[in-house]
Picture 1 (tube, rainbow, N blue to C red):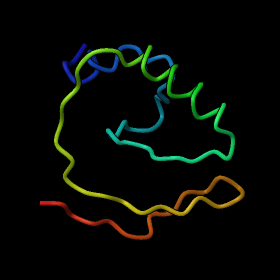
Picture 2: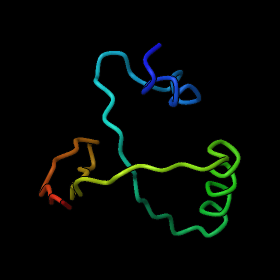
Picture 3: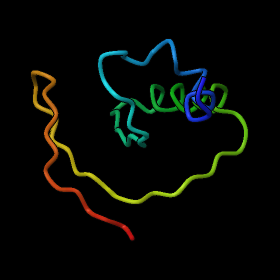
Picture 4: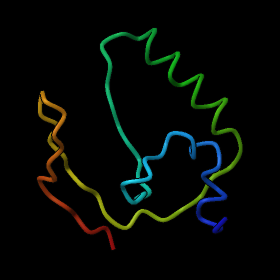
Length: 78
């Protein structure tokens, strides 16, 4: 197993094999504070430990009601 995928081992069952994995950070919102706190607790448990990386770009996305995702703008950060 390549080193990149070894670090993703907890996520492997959730990755789609028909699409390449592109490392990313997702920011989301939820009107329910309880749901946000529950998601945070789950993330802290699942992703325990230290993590470090470099963010090279920022992408602004639009998510349509049908689930289609469109990149509106890609902003280099270097």
